[in-house]
Amino acid sequence: MSVHQGTLVDAAWPEGTAGANALRAVALIIFGSLLMTVGAKVQVPFYPVPTTMQTFSLMLIIATFGGRLAFGAVGVYLAQGFVGVPVFAYAAAGPAYFAGTTGGYLVGFLVAAAVGGWLMEKWGGRGVLRTGAVLLISLVIVFACGLTWLSTLIGVPAAFQYGFAHVILGDIVKLALTVAVVAAGWQVVRQR
Image (cartoon, rainbow, N blue to C red; front, top):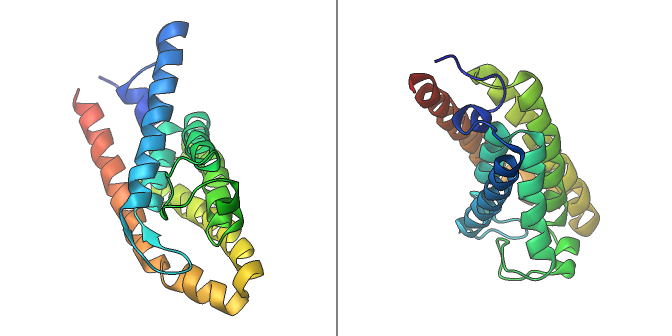
C-alpha cells in the first residue's frame, strides 16, 4: 500500500464522508486535549516553570495531526483551563492562570500547534530530518512566547535561567523521542 500524502493521522485514519470526517475531527481533538492534560500532570515541579511531558504531547500532536486538528486540540485544552478545569501543570486554572509565569508558554503552545502543524502538512511528514526541523521550529515558537512573557514578570536573566536553561535539554530529548515515535508510526502505516 502506498502511504497517503499528508499527516500520519491522515495515513492511519483516512478521511471519509462529511459526517465521518466531523466525528474523526472531534475524536482527535478530544484525544489531543487529553494528551496535553496527561503531559501536564507528568512533571518535575520546578518554579517558576515546571518540567513536564507537555511539550512531548504538543510535539506529538503537531507531528501527527496537522495544523487545523493540532490547533483545535490545543485550543480545546486551553479553553478547558481558561474556564477552570484543572488541566494545567499546577492545580490552579482559570483566566488568572494565563497571567502567571506559564501563560506565555500556553499561548506559545497554540501558536506552535498552528504553525508547526501547517509546516508538517506542507513539508514535514515522514522524513526524520524534516520532522525534527518542524518540531524544533515549534519549540522555538513556544520558548519565544514563553520567555517574552516570563521576562516581563521576573526579568530577562531569571527568565532565561528558569524558563529556558533548566528545561531545554529535556525538551531536546523529548523532541528526539517524538521524532522516533513518529518514524515508528510511519513504519507501521507503511506495513498495513
